[in-house]
Image (cartoon, rainbow, N blue to C red; front, top):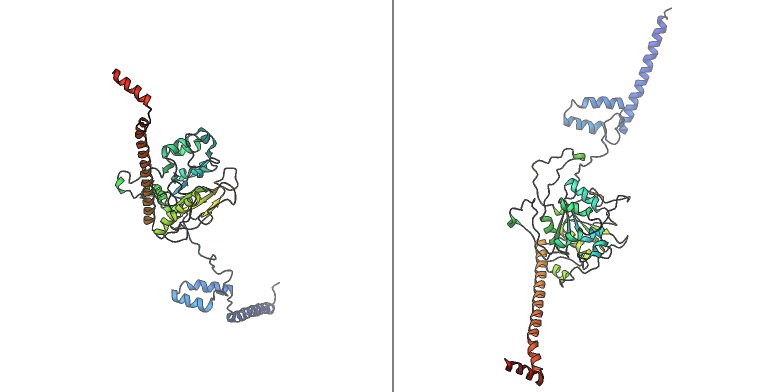
Length: 426
């Protein structure tokens, strides 16, 4: 049976009244919220749909009048992700420099000036934990590694490295060129793969006599090798473009110098020069008088990062004010924390930005004038020592020549008569 017409009309009237009541409530809420900056979600959503048909100025004016940013945002409104994140490239080291054989070898009480011919010394030395792993990472990504020494020549150092206990952990990298050796006692030359190898006149070396605390030895060693820089890109090589990149020497700001300490030996025990006075003559501040501090100063002056290896235990470092980071060691495979190539990248685990060349007071230095001053002072001192040695040799030679005459003057009369009798028989 169909419902009466009056009942149907009554139902429609009630629905209309209810709809009007809800509409009135919504309208009242929107009017009340307009003064407080509130916009109904549905209305805000419709307003957003209509904004795309407006011009840029009209949309900006609409947003200023109807959509205050702090109070009109609803759950349906598009929101920003908190802030814009900067995309930054991670630069791996272009060269890893082991400054001193004690940064790559564990020889106990032995040091750089230990005799390479001593079998006892060779038997007591071994490659430090983590050195082989770090060199293998450098070989995989094409980062060259350098081993610098100030007390041995290249042939002596090579013989010493081949005589240590686990020599295969280092010699394999020397054979394939992943690790190169440089000595401050020998002239730096270009490697065969260097773009300047066929044009040695284009060399820009500071020359001999520029070992620590002078940065010339580090800069010459970096200049003598070459590498192909990695291209800019995202993670896993995304977007990396490598075509057209030429070989070049590593940039000092992307090099990391590893210094082992503490080493209390004088930095210039054989030269007899005053490094502080030489630095003051060119307006630089150098007060390092030990080997480990002098090497950190040299790395800092060269514009490279300095990683200090505190191999004698926690709290024994003597260059807290010079090193960029201090670690107990590179870490073995069994350690909880190890120093990898990513850790010493820029940015990495120890620093964020590339360094700049600074002296011990944090001031810029004219490196050409500083290296030239060290080279002149040490070459002059070497010439003086050579002249003194020659004078001593001449004095000894003269005294040797005069010895027979003095002995002849002290001959007795009997000895003289015997010599004369022998001459008469002839």
